[in-house]
Length: 218
Ligand code: ACO
Image 1 (tube, rainbow, N blue to C red):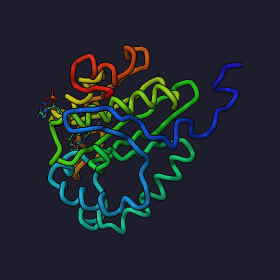
Image 2: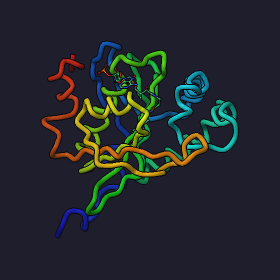
Image 3: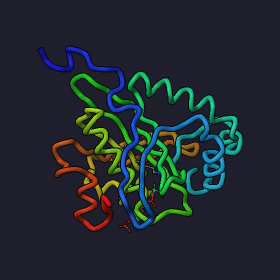
Image 4: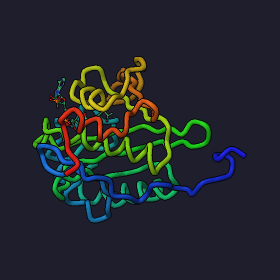
């Protein structure tokens, strides 16, 4: 019988700490979100409003209301239950132990497709140091390894050059343009669909960065 018909644990590869991968910023690690992340989450999200707002799904209420420390507990509880049922992998990106952003793998589908999307954000004060690229590489390797996925999608607005650069550095391909795909910052925005399948990765995504001199394991 095919493996996907025999049943698997609900959330393989979760919870997990992934990394470290060393960059010029320091040691990049992914770790599960925690209830006690409220303060750093709120502080970073509020300080980064200008750099995040153009790329994020439209939300209800003002930015400061949505990112008040008290807004974290309900969000955390949804993420935790979705992670337990194997639908989401909600990671914090740390550099040398500091909370600098988040990486989320969402809409995990198993069965014959074994696919998900990947998304991330990083504190603008730490941008351009290879943090998102290292985090995305760790996320890819975790998804294609312990989580058992075969394909990852990433959707990026055409004007988001930095995020496209992140994906291209770890081997994601452009598959096409999704017109009026997502409600972002109160408007339907086109997105470029990027994708990567497991057989396209030579060794691991982290090794791709190490071979390019962008990261190291030690
Ligand atoms: N056009 C082209 N390339 C650019 C641009 C630009 N306008 N701006 C920066 N870059 C390049 C940098 O030079 C760098 O490439 P290099 O290493 O070859 O020099 C690359 O983009 C960025 O790589 P990192 O340093 O690994 O990325 P960083 O840690 O700065 O994070 C990120 C990038 C996540 C896009 C950050 O700027 C951010 O959080 N932005 C706001 C939220 C966001 O856009 N998230 C992504 C949404 S799409 C998605 O999640 C799939």
